[in-house]
Length: 121
Image (cartoon, rainbow, N blue to C red; front, side, top):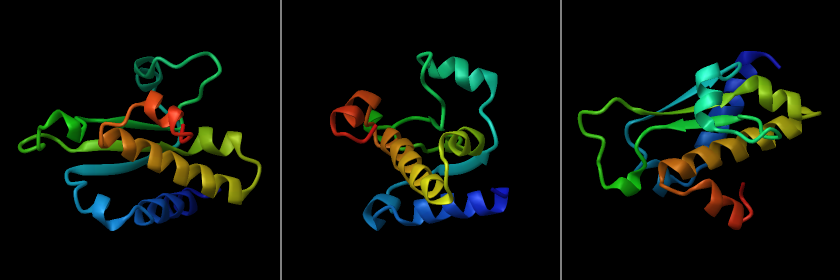
């Protein structure tokens, strides 16, 4: 898939987040990268069978810190790993949305374990 088309899927996924959540997501930048950096993979502490599809880097809202005078939190969506695991454009679209929602949940302080318990991981 062309990068511009993948970026549009990410944009659509972000726009599908309910407005009440988007309104409190201040100081958050979304990035699209082809592949994660070695540092990002290492820091994510993945299991052998896990793939890094997206990454939240920042200070979750649950810390009580409002982000004033801080660089923005960054949510990165990785095109290569998502495309590798999907067979069709529809699967890519669904996985992009799921990955965006997953990483936004981390911004709100929701852990991988909680997402898993809720059937969202």
